[in-house]
Amino acid sequence: MADQQQSTEQTSTTPAPPGAGGGLQKSLKLVFVYTVATGSIFTFVSYWDSVFFSYCGAGTFLAFALMTLAILPVALVYSEISPLFKTAGGELIYNTVGFNKHVGFLASWLIMAAWISVPPAVVMAIATYISKLFGLNLSFGTTVLIGVVILVLVFIMSLQDIQFLVKAQATCLFANIATTLITAVLLLTCGHWSISNLAGMFSFSSIDSTWAIPGWIIGMALLITPYFGFETVPQMVEEGDFPIANTKKAICGSVITCGVIYTIFFFCVAGLAPAEELLAGDSANGFMTINAMENMLGWRFWPVVYGLISILMGMTASILGFWMSTVRMLYSMGKKNFLPEVFTKVNKHQQPILPNIFLLGVSLTFILLQNAGSFMNDFFNLMSFGCACAYALTMVSAVRIRHKHPQWYENNKNVVRGGDALRILAMVIMIAIAFFCTLGQGIGSWISFGVYLGIGVLIWAWMVLVRWKQSTVTIETPDGEQTF
Image (cartoon, rainbow, N blue to C red; front, top):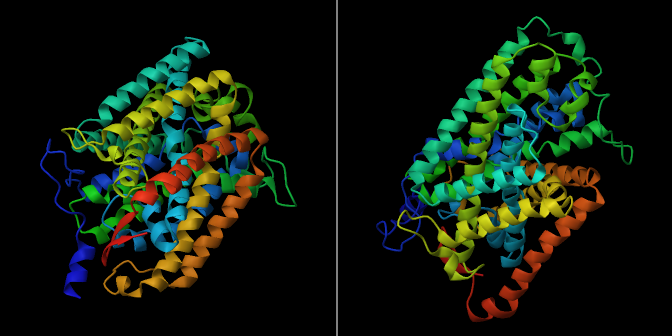
């Protein structure tokens, strides 16, 4: 029993020294794991605000508050199962142990649909803001070129020491949080704010009612997108130098932090004017709050400060968070024989080489595909659906793991209160959100999703027909390594 407790308290085996070709470097403090998750979640506030308000109008702040409550049970279940496994992998591990390697592959592919979409989308948002700020009226081709340059810079950064990455991300994150909260206070006290602008908060939504389900409810379900990111914590545990049970602080802390800020900020924004006025003209295409400060309040200095910090620094924090997580998921897939072993090779800074190159290639492809039509936009729209499906599968696996391996939970400090009732509640919430998300998608989104799944099917089929016939999937569990 003592050995088992020691196993659950440790975070990872000692890596080889730098440059020795070993695994990931075990050096992360808990605060940086928290900032990786929070920085991943807390983005798009000053760019996607137009999307959020088009979904839920003046009631956007309430939709965020409700979504925070809906996500917390899922975060608590993640907090329960994360300490059981001390290597990177998250959904890959949980669903392989809970079901089998095929469901594990599917869940990891679904969650990466969300993660992989972020870097190309974010760099295009940054490039668009640069064009707006300086009045450059850049052509789409030039905007794409700027996005490509930013991606290459992120790629170079991602090959550096993990301490450099997490400290850079933490700096960007806290600057973004401070500026966003200051902006909220300035809006609330500007003299233009009125509670009357919140009237009819449930009556406005750009999404049509479907099957008697109000568009506002469907819009709220789509707001899961600004919350995904807390699941990046299990991708970082292999590099953590803290008791693994403390991952709960990072997982739940990131959700609560972002949920509270979202709710406060959009409450302050909603009181400036009715949603229809806030979304009028070019504001429907993004930067709604910045445009409102400039056009409604006549401000010139603060919108620039807010935009530079929230967009340039906030979005950089998000890129780094999801980039690091995607790289570590691909690395874990190589380690556990879901991908060729070459995905596990690291450089002198203990950073995976091929996963970084692979992610750069995919991100560049997505940016260039925008020239061919709406593929990237359609793919980006399904982030919420892929994320919700991955969460739902993981909740089912959590129930199965608890019943298949009850001994693993004897020394688990993070066992959820309510037991299976809370786990099943979290599963039902995610299934419902995934269903509502399907109602907000167009045919282009489904085609894009089909293309993405098709790539995954090809990789999976190669593993089934070739790779797995020669070697097995291996997962490190509290009972030692097990094959699947």
